[in-house]
Amino acid sequence: MSAPPTTRPPGARTVDDLLAEARARIERLTPEQAAQRVARGALLVDIRPAAQRAREGEVPGSLIVERNVLEWRFDPASDARLPEATGYDIEVVVLCSEGYTSSLAADALRSLGLSRATDVVGGFHAWVAAGLPTR
Image 1 (cartoon, helix red, strand yellow):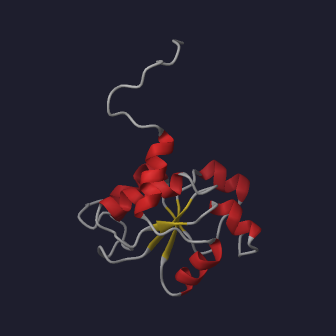
Image 2 (spheres, helix red, strand yellow; image 1 turned 30 degrees about the vertical axis):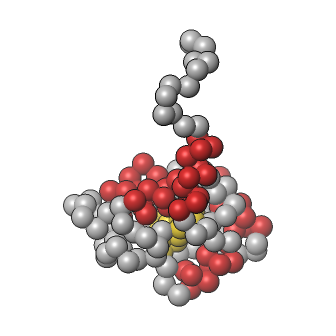
Image 3 (cartoon, rainbow, N blue to C red; image 1 turned 90 degrees about the horizontal axis):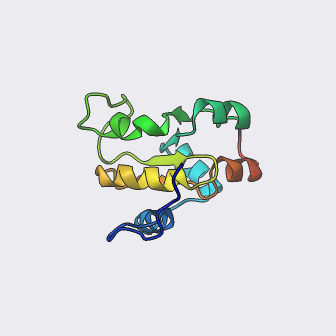
């Protein structure tokens, strides 16, 4: 295995840069706020891989869409979209394990035109810590 490059190519950003940029474009929710939005009709979308969900647990009623297919399943213009992807105005609350990948995923959905896409600060771990329902 070769050593990592010592000089970043021009225009390249770090993952921390990408995360900060994504979070600047979305309104993130606490677990309690997310639960309130879901109670009012928002879709809670769990993007964690199956092994992680099996290890950590799940939120009852959440829609399982693993990260690698998220954009195809929610783009209203995609032939692979889910029935829940009814248009650009749906509210999608993305949930991952700790609230990092979900920020990038919510921003990707926002880039597709789903301007109400957001994520949960602290992810599933924070959801559990807040005492919200899990199984």
